[in-house]
Length: 209
Image (cartoon, rainbow, N blue to C red; front, side):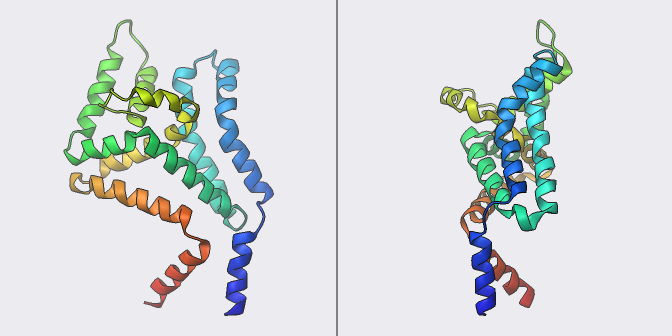
């Protein structure tokens, strides 16, 4: 008993590892590095590479952290906190869930994509997809949200989760769309707030059953 409590305490108070420092550096350095990379490599084509680049960063850092969970558990909690806060502030996840609940999410996304593909002057399909992703991330079908302009410094973090959350809602039955939204928000909040020993106790309780 004392050994288990001591182990839990050590997990909570263990210092941040070198790997976590690298992962945090990638996470928080990305907003600065991405525009520079776009300018150097892609001729300042930031409009489409920024949202797609942000969404690709998440699976990379998550896979690295999960493979080294013993030394990267603090980073995973911090990553969930960042994505949860920015996703809720952006509002796109809620609006997508509301559209999915009445069965119009896919129709809305297809309509928006078609509209931007055929806009004048013409734009590329990649630019159209990037624009739709931006609308999904923030205020899809809810344009009267000008205050979100102040969120531009953290827009990349909302982009990180947006494609995966939207895909989840597209394959979720309409009657489960809002429960999925509230369930993910609740689970994310509990993961960030509850200490590791609380999760361990719940896991042990489930295994005993």
